[in-house]
Amino acid sequence: AQSVTQPDIHITVSEGASLELRCNYSYGATPYLFWYVQSPGQGLQLLLKYFSGDTLVQGIKGFEAEFKRSQSSFNLRKPSVHWSDAAEYFCAVGARGNEKLTFGTGTRLTIIP
Amino acid sequence: GAGVSQTPSNKVTEKGKYVELRCDPISGHTALYWYRQSLGQGPEFLIYFQGTGAADDSGLPNDRFFAVRPEGSVSTLKIQRTERGDSAVYLCASSSGPRAGETYNEQFFGPGTRLTVL
Image (cartoon, rainbow over the protein chains, first blue to last red):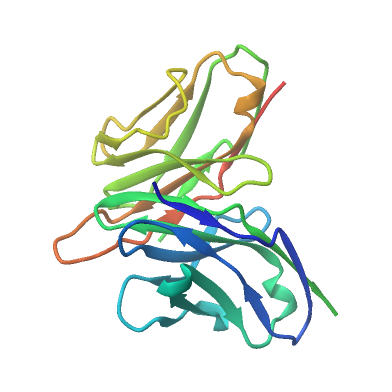
C-alpha cells in the first residue's frame, strides 16, 4: 500500500527566506508524486507533479521539488517566500492505473514579516 | 469555465440523521472523486467514478456511505445514520479521465462541504 509522511506539522519562516517542506513516500513501484496547496476556504490546488524523467520539477508560484529515489523523498522548495504563501501544503502519491491519491497529513506554513 | 462546485458549503446535522452532499464537476470531466478530510489530516480517498459507474469504492468506510452519479455528471454522496465521527470536510474532485498515452489527469478540487454531526 502506498503512504506519505510529512514530518513537519507546522513551519514558520520569515518573508523572503527560503523554504523546504519535507515529504517521504512509500510505494513499491515508481510513484507519481504531487504537491498541493490549500488556503482557508479554498480547494486544493496543484503546485507541481512528478511522473518520470528530470528529477527536479518546476511548478507554479515559484515552487520546485526534487525526487530522490534513494531517499524516497519529494521535498518542496522555494527560494524566497511571500506572505501569500501562508497555507497548508500536502504531498500526495499516486500510481499508474490507480486513480486515487494518497495524501500526507499536511504541513501548515506560517509567514512572519 | 466554472470549477468544481459543492453544495452545501456547510451542513450541520444531528446524530442518526441522513445527509446528502452534492458535487458538480467541471463540464466534460468524466472522472469524479470523493475524499474526506478530517481535522488535522490530509484528504482520504473514498470513491472514484468513471462515467456513471463506481470504478473504485475501496475507501468508503462502511455501508452507511453511498455515492451515485446517475448521468455521469453530478454526484451525490449519501450518508445514513450519521455519527459524530463522520464530521469532516468532504471534498470532491474531477478530472478529464484516463486517455490513451497520458500518464495522469490532474484532479481539480472543489472547496468542500463541511459536515458537522452533533
